[in-house]
Structure formats: C-alpha cells, structure tokens
Length: 212
Image 1 (cartoon, one colour):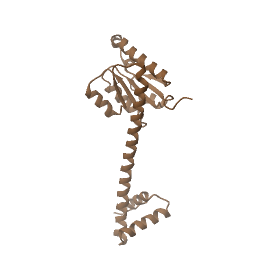
Image 2: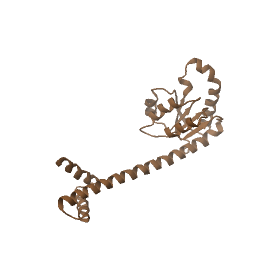
Image 3: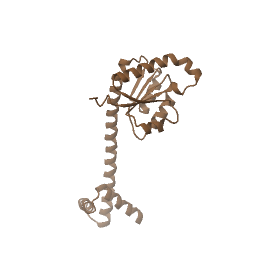
Image 4: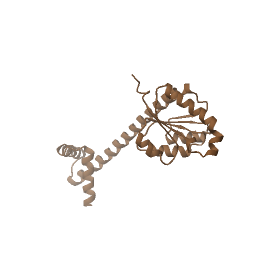
C-alpha cells in the first residue's frame, strides 16, 4: 500500500519550456541534467508526476484543472515571473511550492519565501535529495497553514467579540439595563432564533444603523 506522502500528485513548472530556441541551446545541457535528476528522484520515491508545464499565462487554469498536491518549479535563474504565475494559480487553494534554482541571491530567496515557497533549493540537485527536500517542504507548509488558520480564527473571534460588545451596548442604552442583563437578553434571543450570538449581534447593529 502506498503511503500518503508517496501518493502526492505533483505538477512541475519548467522555465526552460517557455524560452525561445536560442536560450534553450545555451542552457539545455545543464537544465536537462537537473530536470532528469528531479524526475528520477520523484519516480524513485513513488511520487505521481501529473504534468510538466511552462510558466505562462495559462498556468493558473491548468493548475485549477488538475488540482495537484504540490508544485515544483525548475528554474534556471531569476524566477520572479514564474512565481507570480504560480502564486496566482495557488491563491484560492494554497499548496506546497518547491523551487529548484541556480539563483543564489539572498534577495531572490527572501522574495520567493515571502511569496509562499516552502523550500528554496540552490544548485547541487541530485535524485537522492528530492524526497528529503519534499518531505521538509510538506512539513513546513502544514505548519504554516496551521499557524495561518489559527491566526484567522483568532481574528474572527476578536471581530465577533467586538460585534457582541457593540450590540450589548445598544441594548443597554435602549432598554436602560445592565451589561449582564443585556448579555442575557442577547443569549436568549440568539437561542430563540437559533443563531450564533455574533450573528444576532450583527443583526441588531444592522437594524440600529438603518434606523439611525
């Protein structure tokens, strides 16, 4: 039985595919060797390569259609344009992004990580390194997503609390009651209408705003 990691469906974005013939002639040997090592490493580890695409304007649509579990970028050097396409393709459904490149500039690495790259690998690609790199990238992505979700939940709870506090204040002012009484009234109304406390609070605020 294949493991969950090995069954990952992977799309490779190869920048060489989007170059013209002159550029391919100059970079073909080095790029082909890296691409070959990458494919061998993926296949030996049991990963599923579902497609190899160029970095062009159609990439977001292709990714949306295939819904891969991970995207690997095979870039010769400056990958900013490639990253822009990949980020667009993963905006609605984030997934791990691994970038193999020859670009050693710190600014490029920082820009890539800020854009959402889970692993930035410079030079020296061998088939044996592929699986460990992808394992780390997947683990980091999962940790980042957990932190993002926790932050989002915290912001949502804070916003809901502010909404409830404002509605409570409106009830206190309108009915000349205490804070505790206003909160109890909110809870009772929410239960009667089968609504979350924050949903009822927002309705009260909306009505107050309409009435001026």
